[in-house]
Structures are given as C-alpha cells and as structure tokens.
Image 1 (cartoon, rainbow, N blue to C red):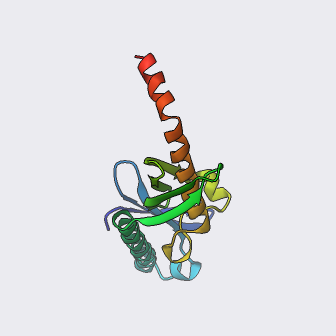
Image 2 (cartoon, rainbow, N blue to C red; image 1 turned 90 degrees about the vertical axis):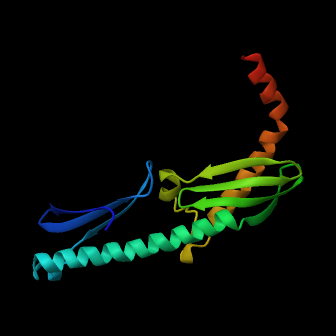
Image 3 (cartoon, one colour; image 1 turned 30 degrees about the horizontal axis):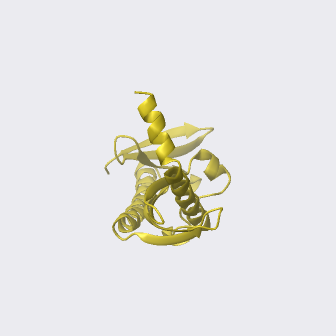
Length: 167
C-alpha cells in the first residue's frame, strides 16, 4: 500500500480510512465501516477486510486514471453553437473527476475549462458516469467551456488593451 490505512472507533463501531497521495495537491481516499461479523473474527480479519476494500478502490482508481490518460492523448471531438448561431468546433483535451478542459479549434482558437466542485457533487453532477464514461453533465460542461473559450476570444483585443494600459 502506498498510503496510510487508519482505524477509528465511532459510537462502538470500527471504521477505516485510507488516503493515497496522487500529487502535491490531491489524493485518493476511501472510508468504510467494518461489519460486526468481521469484527467478531478479530484483528487479522478486520485488517484483511479493510485491505481488500482498499485494493478494490485502487483498481477503480487505476482504471479511471487509464481512461483519463487516454482522453488526454486521444482527444474527444465536440461541436456546439454559440448564442448567435456560430458553429463551434473543438476537443475535450482533459477530463478528470473534477475538471473538463477543452480547446476551441474553429472558428477561432481558444481554451476553456469547467471545474466540478462540491456544489456540483451535491447537485448530482459528475464528469463521469457508469463505466467511467463522460456523463451528460460532463458533455454539457464541455459545451459551456467551448462557448466560454469563444466568448473570451471575442474580447481578447479589449483584454489585451486593458493589460497594456495597466502596465
């Protein structure tokens, strides 16, 4: 195990948590409760149960990381329309459990992204759905990011002028 497995008592129940670093800013985590039938079997059974749950979670994390890497190397083409009817074409260049990043290719070049935070999760909106495929909410976010990239490109000359004025 790459991370830390810890056990705690909570209202007479044994719970475990496992945290594994991904990079300097994020980590994987799994929390669980040990069933009373396992607790009765003792320390070895408790540890084995928790380690099995961690192993299952790690397999899921590895599968997700493989899919995310595949998206970064084999972009997903997307197309949508801007408010004025302009056709926008681009690609999803990154999709993680917390982020959709796109690149706009036509009619202009630009970049955009949408973060999925706590509020998204509370609303039941996730980047990925079953089978770790991009969900409907994930695609909707990609389309919003594409429109945002286009809008930003429309205002780029003004933004550049403001930057120069503030020097």
